[in-house]
Length: 429
Image (cartoon, rainbow, N blue to C red; front, top):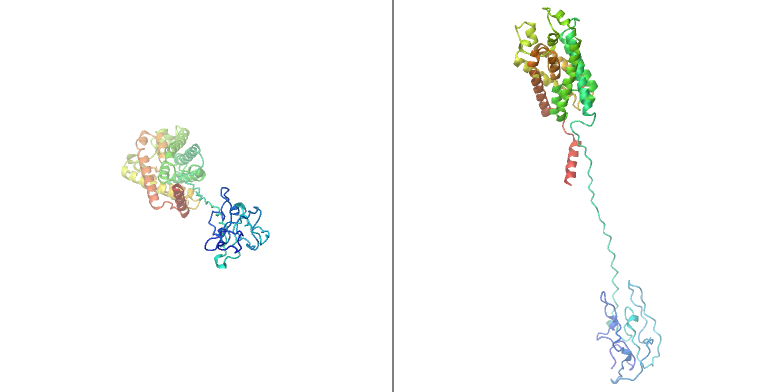
């Protein structure tokens, strides 16, 4: 009996089939596994085996050559299913005589097509159409690497003073400004007595206008302080570096002392005696009329011949309060919210008005550099009472600076706050 799915004629070769009617090559293909078995040279091909007749007796038919292919009537032409791999089509079968008794030679494994076709006599239900070959997997999209770049905005943090003239230039400006103020104010005070113009208003205007000129011409270089009390107030208010405090003071005292020396050397020796009521006098006693003092050395005591005087407490209070007002005006006038160009006039006129108040009490100190310059060339009592005209103005300047920072300091603007936040974020990153 012929195998299932083979022709009924005995002696014809056919492909062995399974019990369910499919040929070996029609088995479903597993991924990664070839659809046919590899050629095994150590096994005897089916073409060399003796086929059996209908009565199960082997036949002695000689095997055909390897080039012989199965009969066309046994295996009809069927095109192999389309796959994505290189296209392979089933080779055309050469027609063989139907009466040939020799079985077809087995096709080598290398020449077996990708999918074997079923025999012609096999039932149609047993040979389902092969599934379409799976589509080739798409190549994975190239990985896109997104690099996060942290952008750090450059933030400029300004200090108390911006870059400008060097320290030497600023010290020179302060020395020259103080020289101008002392030379003009004290010079008017000394020589206006015999010119018929000596009044309190004249002296006050002389100091005030000289201060106005110094601030207007030197403000862009050093700030135009020309006063140690103003410098202390600027430092406490954050306008000037603390390390510049002592150099500024030395420059201001030196400039004032130089102006006082020039005036002292120009005073004629006989002039003090001519102007004195007693006919006696010296250049130092003449110069002491412009020095600052209190108690028996106050201007009121000299005018009243000792009948009345301003003691220590009134002198201290006047110097503290008036200097605090002066420094407060300087800080407010030089604020960046104030219109430019008004500061010199505000400072100069304020100084002149305050001098009108303080001249009868203490000869109007309000400026330690000016007080020191005159005391150097005056009588001994001027140097003994000089301490008050340093302590009181510096205390007044400190009070003004603290009040200014507490109630009138420049507020931070939105842009400045944003710059501070960006800086913290950049440091955190």
